[in-house]
Length: 80
Picture 1 (cartoon, helix red, strand yellow):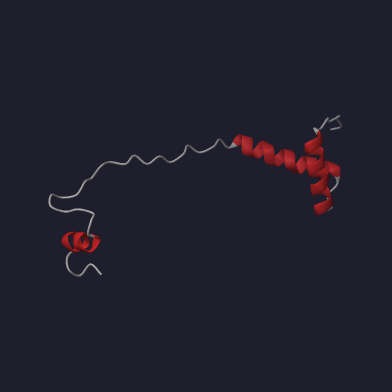
Picture 2: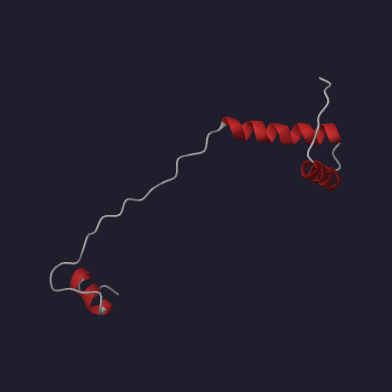
């Protein structure tokens, strides 16, 4: 199909830079990047994974002040 295409200056520069880098023709480069854009538009963005933290707290009598003591109390003397 033959058509007239008006490109913004920044798009034109980027396209020509890519043509020089790859050695592709104008037609081939335009088709390549249009295909990439159209394919990405067909695949909606995945919803972001959201972590919902819950406060677990420490058992009574334990604190974060002495980590070695905390590990020994929770995991036993062989925690290393």
